[in-house]
Image 1 (spheres, one colour):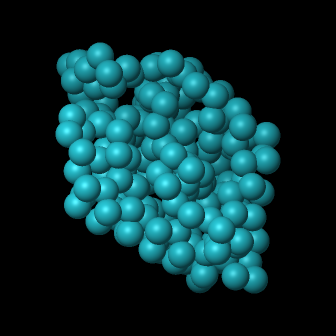
Image 2 (spheres, helix red, strand yellow):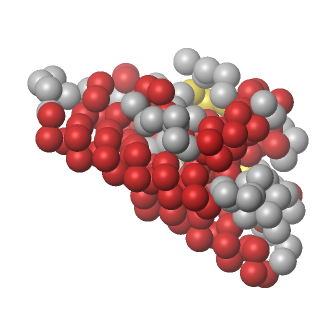
Image 3 (cartoon, one colour):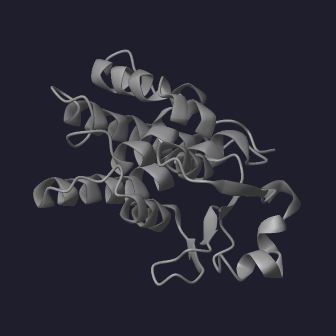
Length: 205
């Protein structure tokens, strides 16, 4: 059984969705970010950057336990472990990695900053909100264009879709306008309807 350290954030949700999609047994260890539990020494031993999510798999690649932090690395590890949500075709595999890196380098950081300036700053930050709102909308448009004529980002449903979904599904909270982005709206609705995704979005708080 995999020990899963998480909280209710897009990065936490993406790993729980992956665990559900892969039919893996796991035990949830909530890490309450509001109470500073991410700084506990026992958690830092697993996740040195004091960020969720993290996992400990007692059955690692060599049969001994392994701990992994960073959501992108965890997605790749679970895909490799189970043979799921990652294409076997080499060209498609690299495309999935492209879109996973797109989420890690752009969608997550930019939408995360937007959420911070919208909801967590003690004083209004008009410039910052405008800057990150514009970038969030631009990134949504990038995904919408990619989905033209495609059901998913690359071939079949993959870890790239899981990674991007948990952030872009928050479009209403972040003020991202989907009125002119029908491909993105359809993609969000399609993924949200998956039973494993619905289980993965259940609160751990």
